[in-house]
Length: 286
Image (cartoon, rainbow, N blue to C red):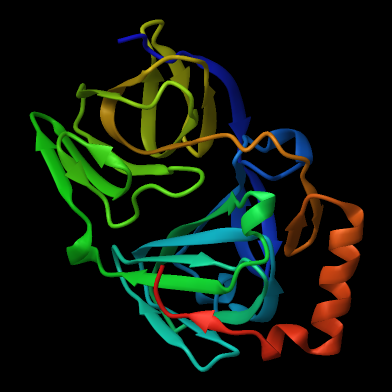
């Protein structure tokens, strides 16, 4: 296997979203930090309720997918079609906003830790106007791969003969949560044509054969190859590994709308303001 090396480090930056939720944003902090097909990665992590209680009140999306992965706490999704989803520790919601949805994501706790991630994954132009859909995935549905010094949750894609709840699709995403013990190492194949990156959210990690250091709470964009290789330091590491097939299409973004042209963005704004999102149809499962 040809090991992917660390090409670029994207440090996460403090940010605020929704009604003032404090978070850190790596990919997507600026247009130059996207990594096709990945648009954005946010990490939210706080023991202070003032940082998250305001949540994410009703807001629209069009043209991409959102993936919410909870580590700690309880968040509830509601949308304009009457669907409700509760996310607890280890749960995932994979939502395809596609042609349009209005939803909220609100904390269901008044104290304690709230921690998790939201990933934005682009859709190809031909799928941006299909009906919206989503899938709530409980922690018990996510396969766990265990090796000496390594545990890996397979949220999407394949790893060591196990397949995640999300598999295939236009971008064929891979999404693993890899836990490395102190001094542990991890190596696994990834499709050669995919773009890939890793995000260290606990400890620190060394990436590739060159063992380049990737600091805590930073994303590392990986080069070409067909395998990823990680090693943990003395404190161990917890790392997200993500890969997807690049779309190589124009990206025009205006807040929660991601399309291919300015005209499509203008149409999205008009559709939202005219109530067309509220009249759309949604499938309950992907």
